[in-house]
Amino acid sequence: MKKLTFELEFITPAFIGGANQQAELRPTSFVGLLRWWWRALKGECDIERLREEEIKIFGGDGKMASPVYLRVEGDVSKDKGLIKKYGLDLIFDEKKRAFFGSHIGVGYLYYFMVPKKKRNGQEEERREFIEPGSRLKLTLIGKDEVLDHYIASLWALVFLGGVGARSRRGGGNLAVADYEPKDLVEDLKISFTPTDDFHGWLKENLKRAKELVGPPKTPCGKYGEYSTIPDPRNIDFNSVLILSQKEFNNWIEALNDIGNEFMKFRKIKNERKDEQNKRNEEWVLNIAVFGLPLRYGKGEAVKVENTKEVITRRSSPVIIKVIKTPNGKYKWMALQLWGKFLPDGAKLRFRGYTKLPSFNLIEKFFQKFGGEVKEEGKNE
Image (cartoon, rainbow, N blue to C red):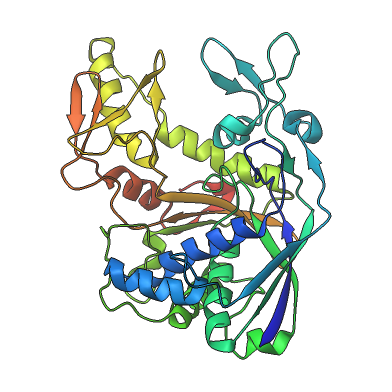
């Protein structure tokens, strides 16, 4: 049995906790996250084979306990007033159900988590969050052959994802402050210490993380049954990953920049009044693949039809996050996951229009930036 301890730092607010909306660190939450990222790394579309291997590594089915003990501990700082705490310039327009102000990008990405500061100056009390700068220790104890999988999954969680609500929109992003023993990780030839060439470093270590979890017998491909991380050995990595070239002084500046870019890209533009309704409805169906639920106008929601199950929610295949650079600055990143958005044959409906889901708009979003974003976070 070997023991490995990571000291992790929250670099963006983490909306993580139980049903009572109070922020808390729970080992079961982290185990669940590591399982999810293991599946995304594995990319195995023989579901029975996937489940069998997953149970051997993480336990489950009510019969097998996890072969790895996971402990999470930390004295984290918490708050509820996100706007007040960080002096965000955000005003919520109740009629338009939208934020206004110089930090509109943060409000756009964190929409449901941000207290609605109204024009009368009052501020709603929203969900409690763990403050950036808080640290936790995550300890893993187990055998080498199983620990390898946990380490690969933890690498993906830290550098590709986040924890808690809005984790695909910059919530609960982490950085590695330290880990012990060093040789246990270094022997696996996977790095938890980013270099100045973060894009290249990320690509090489993602390859190694996939090697540690092992190759799939039945690869999922682009339209598999569940979300997977594209293999940088088989594709142009720039087509699924965007990294800001500009460095920012703090997480707020970084998140606000990509939030503004994302908002402008998704914004509906009406060129002629007589085509307004048609353009709105078609565009709403196009942007629905960025995640459901999606409401437009007077609260009307995009619906899913031609499916046996009732579907009202779908996670976004686009992860937006913040990373911390070796010199203590911040960058934003966007990653496209692969996998079906809806079951085969299912259609999106909005008002009188229906459409099969298409990733064309997501691909255009990544093409717009062409890999690493030019100066000021914009394409030339």
